[in-house]
Image: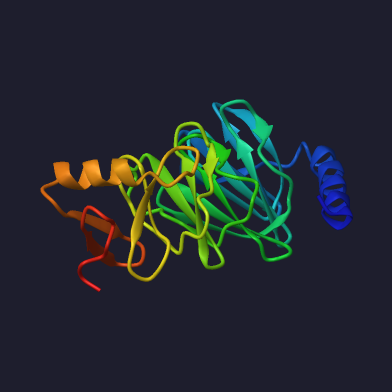
Length: 229
């Protein structure tokens, strides 16, 4: 948290405490929580109990477990299930993409928060992730020209070398490493051509792979050669 935001928060907390006699006004209700206003600032209540003091410029309830707050131009996340902060006010933008929040830091690094699991998918900044399908075993995460894979359940990161395109698959890790060929990687990131051959043979001799974010559809043979380039 910057010193400026810290000072603003401390000053607002003092003023809010001193204005305990001023009535609050409910401005919205989401997921059983009430966003309320005292003077110009917002807080959060549930069943008459104050969850967040009236010190915020913005309060946005994502679901029954998560709320986005803003002080001045900086955002932070608050966990409603245990009343703890998930991060400091280090983000200048927060955008929701299906089951994920994209948080852009003050130095323009993009971080991704998994709403369902209430966790950052990585403390490494990524430019993009596969937010569209929610049934894949792994999330792909793009940084620059290359892709990592993050296990949805465990959060473990797999970084096969040189992957320039990732695919949305229910199981396993498929990645394009050059202009004409796709590889299958094990959970340590090692290329496994034997398993790729087996998977493609079981699919009938060729396999369809898609990336829904980039609207890509490729067909590969048992050697991983892309047939429709």
